[in-house]
Amino acid sequence: MGNSLHNKIYLGRRPVMTGKSLMALAVVGAVAGCGLAWLLLRTYK
Image 1: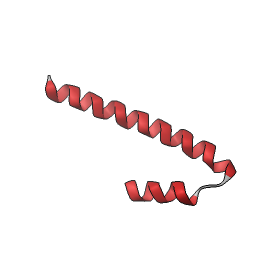
Image 2: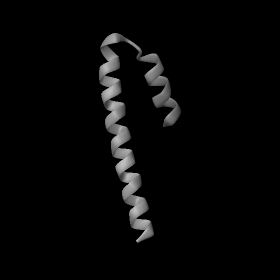
Image 3: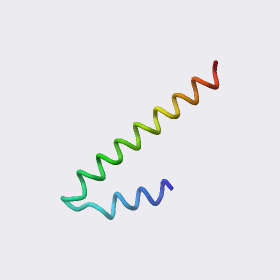
Image 4: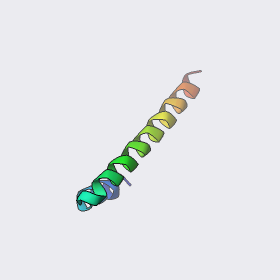
């Protein structure tokens, strides 16, 4: 998944696409970070 996402970002470097892909990447990163933190907190409790 990481490789395809990386390729999509590199291939979609158009002025119209950059805003949307950056926003999507930020959302995905935030969700992944929250999920990871929640899992870690659950594991340590």
